[in-house]
Each structure stands twice: as structure tokens, then as C-alpha cells.
Length: 139
Image 1 (cartoon, rainbow, N blue to C red):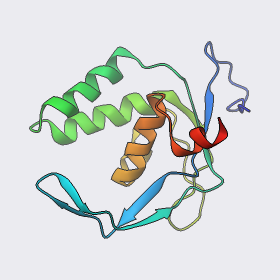
Image 2 (spheres, rainbow, N blue to C red):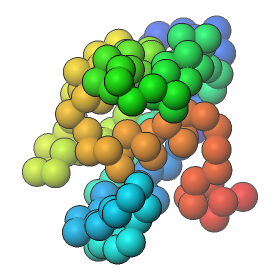
Image 3 (cartoon, rainbow, N blue to C red):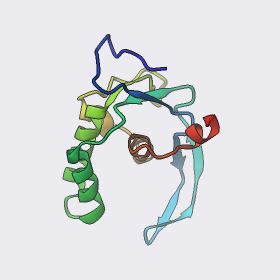
Image 4 (cartoon, rainbow, N blue to C red):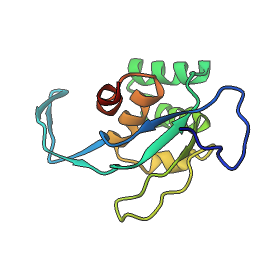
């Protein structure tokens, strides 16, 4: 089911992705770019969801490419990625670590910049239309 995001009409209907499988890892160890210790997974968005426009803009493709190909542009590339991703995420019911509702991210990249790296990676996977554990389970 898709919400109307305050009765806004969309040319392409947003898709709802359940966030039950969005894990934030604590105590993860990374050595030489490889995860050597997974850490403890906390599923911080159980019973929560994200609605997004199910197609990528060229700006999003370019931002992903910048992150993948250059280490030197680091924070600038991440900011650009948060910007273009915030244009696609039209609504969510996510709560913060303190269980209070998070601000809506649509056109507000600063909200996405406050997420953990695990949460941002989960959103990227969902935004790219890649299967998450929750969508596999519901298929």
C-alpha cells in the first residue's frame, strides 16, 4: 500500500519498502577493507517502511559512480548522494534511536546525513530496487 504523502500526486507511484531487515551493526571490525567481525545486528526499523519513487535520476547514477570511483571526493560525493536520494524518498515512518519519529526526508538531505552508514546503505539498496531480506520473504 502506498501513502499519498500529504495528498501529493506523483507521475510515477511511489513503492513502499518494509524496513524490518534494516540492521545497524555494533562492534563490527573491518581490516583492510574486509569485515572480519560482523558485530551485533540491531534491527532498528522493525514495523517501519520507506516510500520512494522507483526510478533513478542521472544525478543519482553519477553520485553513486563518484562514490565508487574516487576516495578523494568522499564527503562531497556522500552529500550529493544524500541530496538525490532525498528527492526520491517521498515518505517514511522511521523513528530515531530514541524511538521518536524522524523528520520526513523528502528534499531534506540533512535528515539522511544523520543516519548511520548501515541505514544509508540499506536505503541505497532499497532505492536501487535490489531485493532486501524483507522483500524476499514477502515474495
